[in-house]
Image 1 (cartoon, one colour):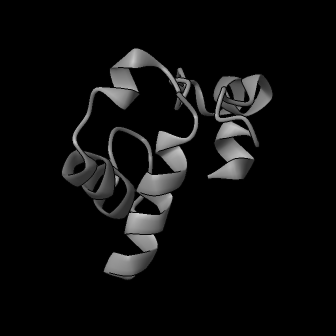
Image 2 (tube, rainbow, N blue to C red):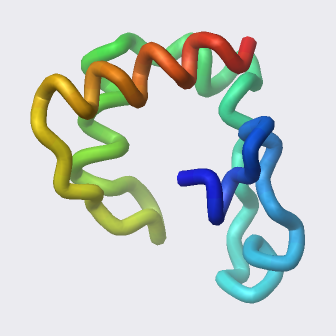
Length: 71
């Protein structure tokens, strides 16, 4: 996640350009409005061009907890 979205979750412009995507800031209202279950699903199943990430349920919960700190 950090490689694509950066340490602050804002998104790395060079990677977005290379992948021809818009990386939503993880602290944005749009992302933060998602339920924990939706954030877990987006992470573990992938969304758009984002590939799935293989995580245990506990690891996925930790990712969601971290995402919540970015608001």
